Length: 232
Image 1 (cartoon, helix red, strand yellow):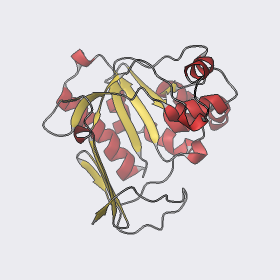
Image 2 (tube, helix red, strand yellow):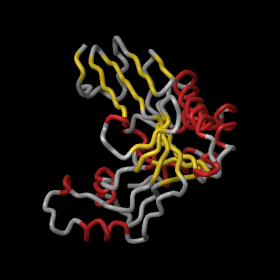
Image 3 (tube, one colour):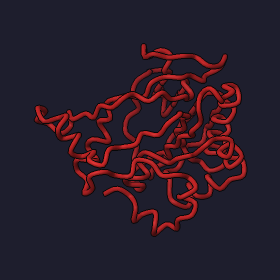
Image 4 (tube, one colour):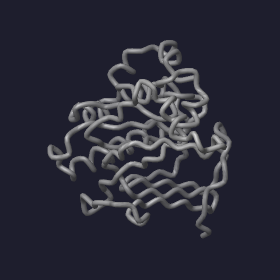
């Protein structure tokens, strides 16, 4: 089997053969559907998901759904708790549960991590980004550097589509990794080069966008309210 990057797939197209996805100890042969407000709300209201989230000090949505939910493929979540209060085997079980429920019950792709502190953007985030890149002429090469955040996540991810296979295993990337369990749970530092966020912030209309939203707040919102607060 040829191993390489998967060619782009139309967002609403599910005419895919020979599909398989593995994330840690969870796998599926059914392709996921793109997130919608109703799908995310159903997933986050699920009793199994709620039983995981309530173990932590907070649960937050981040990533593409806060910018343009109609043009993203997954739901990014992070859970908050001091690492010295964690049982790592239980954390891996929790992340497996979140992935299993998402993929098997809702056909939803979830990218979930655990961290000790949220990234709080400065009030003048856009201006800082412009200043840091004042000598860079091409927007696509803009970067935003901040102190790296330690995260806990599942390291092993394998996606197979039409005989193309994409493998992501953070243990093999050469980054500073600490293996936490006998399976796939690791601790590492998140990237300090947030190029995708830079492009969105620079092209957006607000100086300091919403980079995360608590699950509790989201569940209290109707769809109209949620779409109003999306970053533009």
